[in-house]
Image (cartoon, rainbow over all chains, first blue to last red; front, side):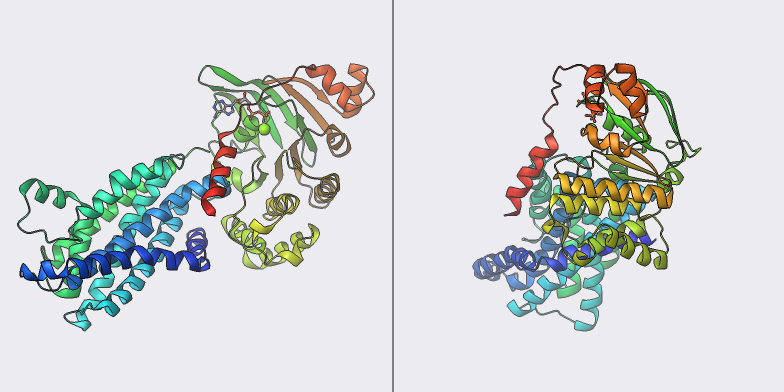
Length: 249
Length: 261
Ligand SMILES: Nc1ncnc2c1ncn2[C@@H]1O[C@H](COP(=O)(O)OP(=O)(O)O)[C@@H](O)[C@H]1O
Ligand SMILES: [Mg+2]
């Protein structure tokens, strides 16, 4: 247990000590929120879909959690290159504990990042439909998205061996997952191929959960989103644990 | 304390370690010397659970490190050939993390961290980030960390590589001191023959994955009819140069440095 704790703590320290990076990582969500939120807002409203900032804010929160998780996972690569990974892998604790400590640490950091972006969204004009239920429900989804993708990040960080793999992961896994998740557009009335793809995207259910919790507009429903996310989280945690256990140094 | 019998490691069709056997007694300082690519690091990796031997047996304090991994890991400390510190944490935090991973009880941990950091003259810098340390300080910290959980065996893989003579000298004094006070068995590799001569009780020389001689420094000199350990080493291993493949790790570290800017 204490091994999990100390590695979890390390991720938190790493995050809180890089203030510049925290601010820098708020730039991208802010850009999406402002440029798209206000840029596409008029078109979106004319189409009768209501406020676009209201619509896109949960997507932007989900995106920032997703990216944070992947970046944290990729930091396994740095630890490998700077040698610290060896120190943990040769210690008398199981790989599972090391993997959990790291992954839960990334997830905690990413959730925190999600809360920061959420606050920015509030400033930009997001209005939860019902504060009392919206906040706890949204938090549940933030945490679930964070754990799910932190585990996926750990899997990526364990599999790819050098930085050349990073753009591949970003361009062929992470960005598609974001763009096909319904973070930026409604999932109804899509071409049928796209409907199928969006339903296969794990992030879809997290974004829908966030949006439903915050704005009261669901594509699926609370129970389905929670169930699917819990299932995917378990699957990705197993995947992350498996690949992490295969790391050779 | 360490018993190795007919140890073999093959990578694909290349055999890096070709049937090495030796014994290291409790409390002994044992130097494992050889030119680049001789198979020293590979042997250490097999002794420390990081690589599975292709064949042969290893026994550490009566344990098989492959079967009783956790128990074996608890019993040894290791200073890798490449750095293994967390630069983003302070010296103290690096020690603390190690202590927790090795199940050192809190009270003992606090006491030992203080005494080891003082011994290795890092106590004043305990709250500095490790990335700000010089090469010598990093090495000292790694060795202090290796001793933290009171291992029965300490593996040191080229611990003095790249250090100035002062740091090297001081580092070996500390290792010798701890070997005497804590009865830690030390298994080391180095390219500096004078160090091995001064510190080690017994020396083994490997080349091309084979053990070609072992004994005390005096015995090795006598058997080769030479005056110094360096001459004995050259007499045994020949004068030809060994090419070491450029490590990809170094390339990555350079890239990492660029990225961080
Ligand atoms: N993972 C590996 N795959 C293939 N060859 C390896 C691997 N690790 C080491 N070797 C080779 O094994 C030989 C012994 O390496 P090593 O044990 O690092 O030598 P030393 O530490 O004595 O300099 C070298 O020729 C090296 O290139
Ligand atoms: Mg070596």
